[in-house]
Structures are given as C-alpha cells and as structure tokens.
Image (cartoon, rainbow, N blue to C red):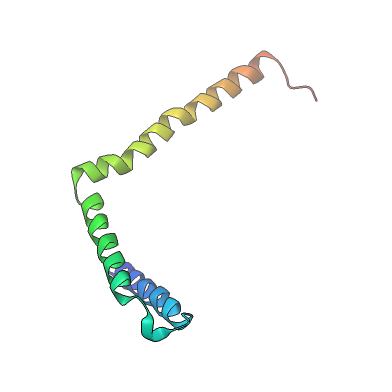
Length: 86
C-alpha cells in the first residue's frame, strides 16, 4: 500500500515540475496530461491483470533464461580444452 502512495506522489511531483517550468502556466495542456495518465493507468491494468499481459511480460524472462546458459557452457568447454594465453 505504501508503494502506491509513493507512485502517486511521483506522478504528482512530475506533473507539478512540468507545470512549474512551463513558460505559460495558463496554457498548460491539462487535457493532454489527464488523457496520458488515463491511458497509462488503463494499459497498466490491461497488461498486469490479464493472462495475455502476464504471458507477454514473462516471455523475455523465459528467453533470457534459455539463452543465458549458452555462454556459460561454451566458456567452460573452451577453458577445458585449452588455457587462454595472452
């Protein structure tokens, strides 16, 4: 629960900083900011709460786990065959 408040505080801080450094604060694009936040929130819900989203996020982990064993085995077989001479 604490992390949600930290994330909310981060959103508020970033929007406040963008508003504070804008040249014309009266013309700050609030509609664009609200649409962006809404899209971000809805995509997060879609990706994190559906099985398709969970599969999509776990696929890079699976592929990196499969490919990370290759260099280790090749390095071991190389060093067993011949010592490295510099």
